[in-house]
Length: 327
Image (cartoon, rainbow, N blue to C red; front, side, top):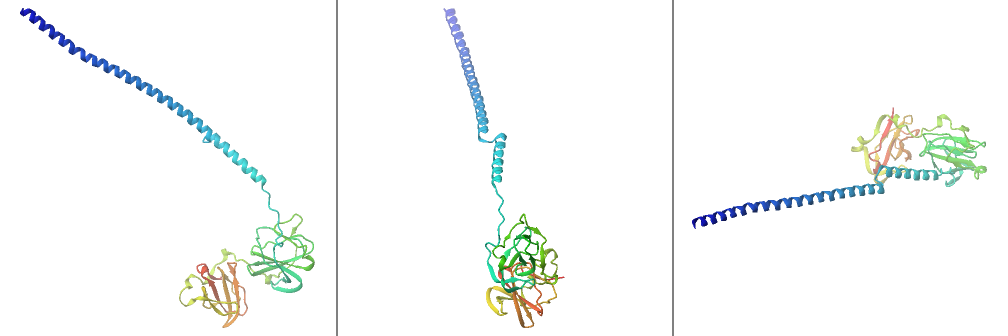
């Protein structure tokens, strides 16, 4: 009996051990199966990602080719722009030469003579001042007198005869012209802003004598000398505010103006003014004249008998004004 009982106990013990060993094997099997499934899933995911990347790259290439981002498209675009610009350039037509007298007012009974005077002559007519650029050519088509000015300062007058048309002389110191002509030419005369095909240069019949030729625009590179008036003179008794000197030599109130004290002047000296202003000339206390300067820098004229000047200038030109006595 005891043997039977012992035998049964041994069998139960062996069975229990067998069950404990079997359970871990089942877990391992399940784990291995799960790992295999995970690996398969990852493989599928990687494959799908690779397919998506290939699709994106293909789409990117296609998009680049279609939207002009490639070098070929840029080159095509540039070629197209150049072609368009070339076509526009081909369509441009040079401006036709114009007659500057067509819209210029005329003054009958006067001409500018060789001394620069507005001389009364009943059979003559002159124009109002015309803007002039010495870098380009001008043609006068009939007998006339061409007077050159820098602002209001006379430089010279040239006479051109009846054998025109004439390309007029270039005068770099000038910035304005006045054309004078007689009655027979008034319907035919033109001032063309170019050298016409049939015109020739160097045909001046007569001109202003050398001693009467004005200097015109100063050469700024040669404007060295003593500053008679400038920034160092803007304090103290050298400047009066709120007034100016008019064309009659009278001091008048003007809140936007300054006027200098008396500055020494000699008709034999060379002086340059660097900003727009009115210059009044005196001999002692005797007023001579007031001259307005709008084109600057400019030489002061030689006013015989004057021994000092006053400068009236606007507040806007306060920092630009100098009077230089050229050495």
